[in-house]
Length: 116
Image (spheres, rainbow, N blue to C red):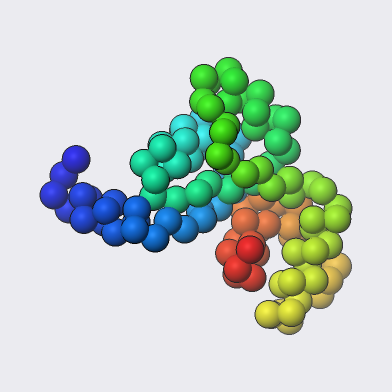
């Protein structure tokens, strides 16, 4: 490990945060999420359908233990996120948010914005 990264990693280990990975169906992203968890620097939240992510993880030999999946296609979860988002920002209508949150990138960004 290089001298620049070591202090950053040690600092992150002192107070691990959650990291949202909206592109969880990307092999490198899924492997990075595992590495981040194994290093103890963050808790990954993977955006996507758990069955699909788990299938990809199995193909890659990536252990999903300790990782959380957030299904951006689950209507109840989308409605909850829309309500939370409208509570902190009123720049979009409910209808627009429902449409935007079908995209995992927008869903993940909204999770970060509302602090979920």
